[in-house]
Image (cartoon, rainbow, N blue to C red; front, top):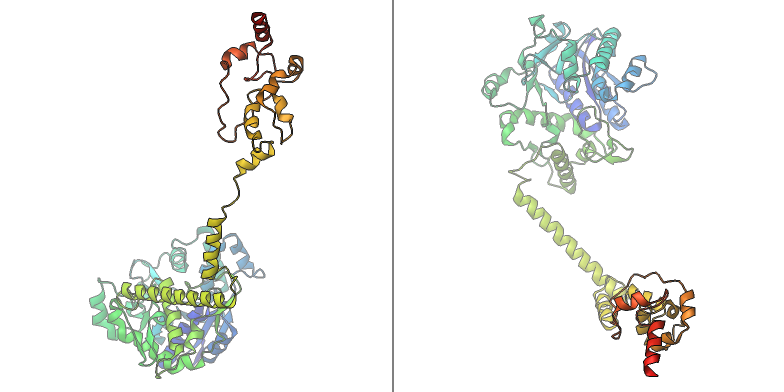
Length: 489
């Protein structure tokens, strides 16, 4: 084993660590002669780190926002680049002379030690834009100086795709034209998802593939796996790579699953399969996919643990966009699941209602009590409205309500009568004119509800012209009284 060369990968949580473990065993199966190193972030549990230590020669923690690191201080002004810079820490592994970086979602099929004969930065073309290289596999030389240069470049220019691939293609901008020797053959980084344009080539040269890359949404640990038959269920769009995906699971079952434990957890939500480098918010620890896989019994009949794993895996598949519309996630199965859930909920609520009704007759959830309350409301209507209460507050009760209505039409003096007053409207005519003149003209109050019409009186407009201040519509003016007296005489 040459200690100056190393294969390097990165894992940011326990779920991606599953890929890192399988990757290490695939390198060992290919009989590599070089060391293995893995960079881990604080989100990787201690239980998972112990497993990584068993297969990797170096397990080194990296933390992007380390205030004691002068290079990382510059990143504080660009916090969105934190995920990008996590992978860049590989340039700080200066204990090695040369390294080859492999994403944790790659699988080594054949010995590739010849890559260490290449120079920095050697990489394979990206299938979506061949003038750019794919950063899932590349050769590099660790250097603190190079790390500082890339860091400074990133702070000034950012990344055109928001990730490490865009940044590295910008920094090593002459890759496509400078030296053809730095172009790795495509077989060193074959994307598992084969589009129609190179599917025939995938089939033609599949035996020459050396490194398979599960780039994009497809991750082998998210593919449905039957623990009883040890077979992975592959959708039609990945049927061309079914045997290679099955190989990933074979390595997992032979070398990895025995070392997993329920202590392997992921911070934050149950859906722990976030994009590489994404940090979950919150400190709550819940068992992730690695913990669920540790409960599987390979080769045995289906168990509750198998169902728990499938539910966990299907949830993560949904959240990562991997939905089996023609299989378990078909509309018929989804509708069946919804119906069963609603039926169970209805039955449970009915049982709880019956139990409450038997044990506590006054329980508001019991049917008898609800019927009694409804009957009580019908037999005893609620109290009068707030408008009626307001009229009572103004002194309008019983027969006095008619007086209260007329008080707005005659004189404000009636407003000061007791609430049980029974005086008729003629009493207001006998009041002293002088007394009426001394009282201010009342401000009209807003009517709370329609009032009965007063008894026929002389037209309001004519009386209003002759009335002294304080007079009401129901009173007679002084001059009118005098004319009536003369006539009578």
